[in-house]
Structure formats: C-alpha cells, structure tokens
Length: 225
Image 1 (cartoon, one colour):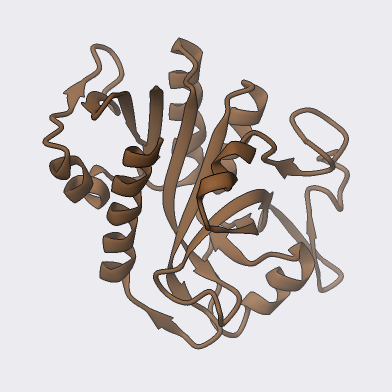
Image 2 (tube, one colour):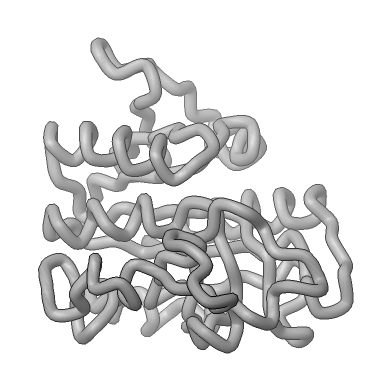
C-alpha cells in the first residue's frame, strides 16, 4: 500500500517510526516530505507544521505530485464532551470551518452565514466537508465517528459551548479543515484521527498521554492495513 501520513511535527510520531526501524529519507525537492518503508507499505510522511495554512499548502503540493491509496492524518484536539476524555481517539468524518467570520450584532457569523461558502458547491459532500471514503476503515477500527470544527483560537472552558451548539461539534482541531479540503478537492481517499489532549468540559489535559496514544495507534494501523 502507498500511504501518506500527515502530522504537524515528526517528533510526535518518532517512537512509532523507531518501532519499525524506519529511517526517513528527505524528498529531493519538498523539504517537508519524507519517504520510508514500514512492513509491506511504502509510506510518505508529511510534516505540515502548525496551522491550517501550512497544512493546506503543503498537502496540496504533495497531492499534486501523486495520489495515495490512503492519506492518514493523526493529530491532536480538544473535546467538547466529558465522555471524550484525554487520550480518546476520535474518527472525524465531518470537519467544519469554525472561527472564520466576524461578530455582527453581537452574534457570531461565519462564512456560511454570509453566503461566502455554499454547502452545495464543490468540494462539499452532502452539505458539508464529509468523508465518505473511509467505509472500509470503519469495518475493523473501533473509533467513534464524530464532527470536528477547525479553529484559529482554541476555546477555553467558558467559551466552547457556543461552538459546540452552533456546529454540533464533538471536538475542535487547529488544522483539520486544511487536511480535509484538499483531499476532497483532489479526490484523495483519506482518514482523519484526532487524539484528545484536552477535555474542555472538566478542564483536564495531558499532552504526554495523547502523544503516547497517537504513536501506539499509528503502530497498530500500519500493522493492520
């Protein structure tokens, strides 16, 4: 299988790479793309850096070079529900753009409210940025399917409720839409996993635990694919 793994920082998955004794070879022209082999898979690893703009640009450049059997994003996020505790892995099947818009008459209006985005226009699927390409992954992976919202500013305990209600979201990411949008436009099969590092309901967080879970999950996925 030709697989693309998308992460914000290589250090976050270093234990998984070391587990397979996989040395990363830099791409000849793209400084943020690396190639390796894990088991019987040929794998490219894309290090996006932090931010939706970096993710969108770098992923678009990579997908312009070639397509993959699967693009897999493993990232971190904050949960809006108490039962999605720190270390929980969520399968984001619908990613929504969050704090992109402005306040008008003391009410938050996003790009849809201003008709700057049309839910019927490409690359929307069924009225949103919905992933319909990963049905076969759901057969053998137990991760809860959820709605994510991409935000520029992480919410705190006092403000997440607005986003939860407006977007019917289960969690927030910093760059999920930057991954989903190019994949949908390029007709690239993809799978987006979010490891909860912070629960906004009870204000608990543990980045070390989330990183450990991310690496264990990646190792398991590579072995199962």
